[in-house]
Amino acid sequence: MEEKKYIGRREQTGFLVGLSGQNMVYSLIGASFFTYFMTDIALFPALVVSVLLIVMKVWDGVNDPIVGSFIDKHTFKNGEKLRPFLRYTPLPVGIFTVLLFVSYFVIMYICWDLAYTVQDVSIWGITAAVSPNSNERDRFVQWARTIGSCVYSAFSTVIPMALEMIANATGASMALMALVFALIFGLGGSMLSYRCYAAQERIHVVQEVQQQSLWESFSLLFKNTTLFRSCQPTGRSGLWRQFGDLLLQVRDCRGLFGREQPDRRAGAVHHLLHYDRAAGLFRYAGGR
Image (cartoon, rainbow, N blue to C red; front, side, top):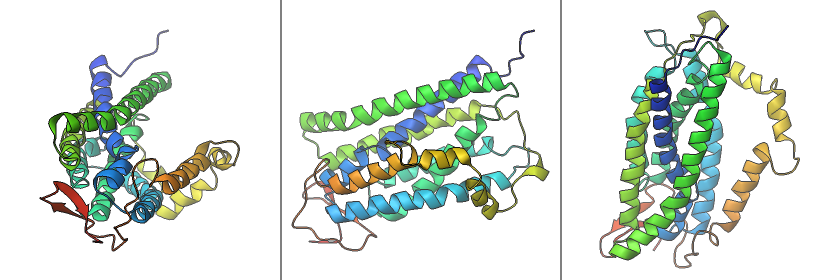
């Protein structure tokens, strides 16, 4: 007997389009482009970039379980836990993405990462609730991961090259072009991610079996054997690979992505940028 299908073609297409928009946003922040922006365009000192990369990773580790626990314990009046977030988060994500290329980097990143994490948890969480049919869910996730990876890889490669080519061809400042790209791919991609709202939440969590506290969420980590296996230092995989990539970014931030600025000194990490009208650049505000 043929299995019952719940996900229509229009619903799946809408979700994949929205997921593509979300990955357009992440290609600006999660890939090497933002490091390039900080070193070569905003002219951050290498020491400050290194500190900020570490702060970003630490905040990600703290932020994710908190957001996950909040979503797990929260239920909207219509009985849904995830889908309403797909409607409310795109605009804040888009706004904070643009503001990341303007000023107050640390504050804007914390706000951006909080909004983005809520959206990201909801997007991937709803893939487990989109259909009672496990085979149909598996196919849905496979399509989502494939499309998401392809879009992220393509845009994270094309954006830096396109920005430099357009800036050289038009004579516009790199800072101005970075802001334009943030509007197009950041705000534009976020608006496109509204289409994830097309996915329906067909499986609802029973209230009695929900986790009761944040500590319970953390305690589950110690029972997750798959996670611990991925942490083992075998080759370059799992969490060890992420940690190694972070160390490479910190070590090479002044070599791979930009030039060391010897005339700039590390200062306070708040209000890092100000706009220099004469130079047409957003400059670091902590040094000379």
